[in-house]
Image (cartoon, protein in one colour):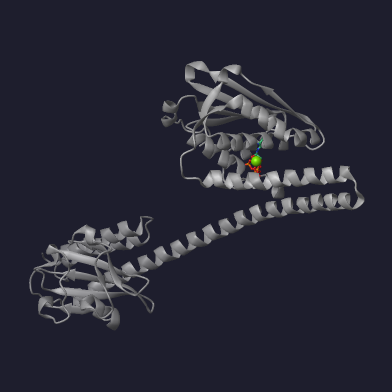
Length: 419
Ligand SMILES: Nc1ncnc2c1ncn2[C@@H]1O[C@H](COP(=O)(O)OP(=O)(O)OP(=O)(O)O)[C@@H](O)[C@H]1O
Ligand SMILES: [Mg+2]
């Protein structure tokens, strides 16, 4: 395979070489994945220097050179061919950080054949270190089938390509570090939101404890009862948070059972009736007896509905009072049941609407974590259902959940509105 290293006497070859180098420089600025770029570079380099095999090895955490990209060897060797420092010609270059160019590598005592039939029969060999400033990040190698002495220009040319690859790797590292830093910052913000929420609930619990203690001291049953109800509500909030986190992170299938949906809703209304009354919110139901038993994970659907009802109560401004209605309906022709949770609260402004299902999105400051709707949507999706909403700012909001009524339908989940 002829080399296309430029010579002044051959303008066509010079043109080809410059084009190849330009393509490599452009790859340095591209947004392709690092492995795809390296694969393209070994291909271009092998054409430019006229060799059938060109490979890139990158250093791993233990300072070993691991085959990352190759043109000419089997691609399943990637990640499997490894050289320790000092081992073979690659290992020598790791230690000396100097290019090694050999006319016939098989005669060199350091030569180690690769575990590949394709690597046999190669003689001339060049191996160059890739350095980012003083740090060694890997090596690039090329092989020719025949005995051949690489000349000075060819070695310089190969080293130039290696420098481009090193720049590229540095760029990829900076990009990875940046993404990692951004992720960490996002996690920190999210965790601090959850921590503030828990702190808030703990403060409420302290208030409840105080009431219970004073009540015991004074033998005042009323105080004890008040304190106890504060503690129970706070306990419910922590339980809700933990369930939401678990529901959002859960990987396994829901535990499907036949469940009387209307009875479950009545049970929920009973449980949260007191706290709704305190907020002057009337909880109404309109339950279709045709709904009967539905094939769902009762705990998950309970948690999901509780999120919607809690949000609905929260949407009614403090002291104003209002109404939250839970409706069920069997949609015969569609093999679905509909569960609506409606409120006559604030409604959701348009710019907020598109974010409400995002994890950690909340407009409630320390009183919300923004996990509720994300977990609810996950639960509904895992049941093969969909969730939609209609809202009118100033008038109220309705969240509608559509669940399939037989197990077969659950494999045909429709996309969630707003995704
Ligand atoms: N019925 C509703 N009316 C008005 N806004 C709503 C309603 N339901 C949800 N939202 C908006 O969607 C946001 C996200 O709701 P989500 O339930 O995910 O989190 P949260 O209620 O803020 O906190 P938590 O995780 O504790 O439930 C809320 O902060 C609120 O702005
Ligand atoms: Mg919520």
